[in-house]
Amino acid sequence: MVASKKQKKAMESINSRLALVMKSGKYTLGIKSTLKTLRCGKAKLVILASNTPPLRKSEIEYYAMLAKTGVHHYTGNNTDLGTACGKYFRVGCLSITDPGDSDIIRSLPGQEAAQA
Image (tube, rainbow, N blue to C red; front, side, top):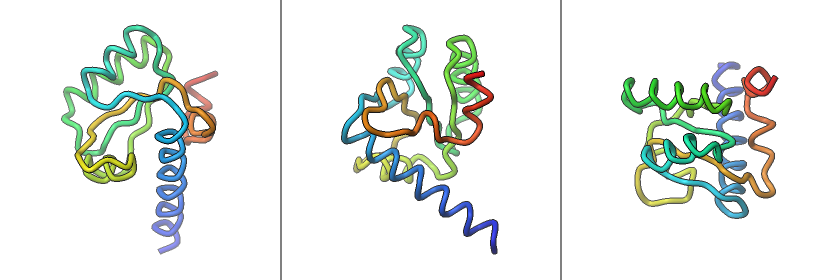
């Protein structure tokens, strides 16, 4: 029960930071545009939904590794990720090019290892 409460709090913090990025930052939604930003080297962080197909997930992780960009695996599915972005459609993948006022790039777990 304690672990689920901690996970829910982490999910809420990610959702609030993501909402701040949607309001003040720059981002691209979708697999194709995420791959474009990774190839150009503009992406700062990539967020993947939990039900992204494994082949697409590994392709994006490979591109992100080459671009030295962090990847965050969102715990919800693509419907939840779309809702967290404030959209009325499903979002399987998004890349953040400019975080704006949000500290989402520094604060997500696992990012310290990616930037070191």
